[in-house]
Length: 224
Image (cartoon, rainbow, N blue to C red; front, side):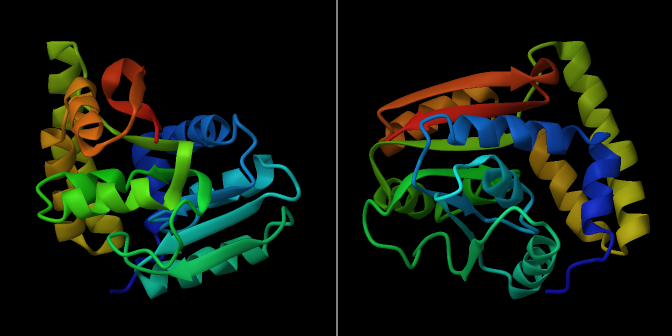
């Protein structure tokens, strides 16, 4: 699948650059235990991985995994232009990762967790695989869209997704279907407490979350 040249631009434009601010918050949380090996799962164009590389200890090893080779090609090109250190890019399936058990001290995912956990028949595989590759006591952090508590904010958010994200994203990218899916899945995705229950049921030992911008997004902080 081709990646539109406007992919990163649209992410910034449609979120008013909040996506970058939230990724940075997630990266700091992922690194709060000073992990030696850390994974950016479903890295896309490596935005989270680049934050992890810049903010981590110099001797920490940062890995970035994605199934899409076009995404990884963009990610590698971006990383080569940033002088923050090496990122190990890996092509792989999130349901069958090419890593040993307990390989990572911490892992994170930014705005791709919805694809793994919303109406996906392989959700259980994805979650069990995440648990498999992180050491006991290690940390998994997800930053993803959520549902505002306020009914008014929720209506405004859903209206924005339908009336702004779909037409503008579709027009600029030329991939209206992709932005229709993005809006539809975000509108119907779990509220933070619902996702917390799913993660605990999957086997994480503890799950906490913090809401972002009245619950439009959230960061889930999980322990293996």
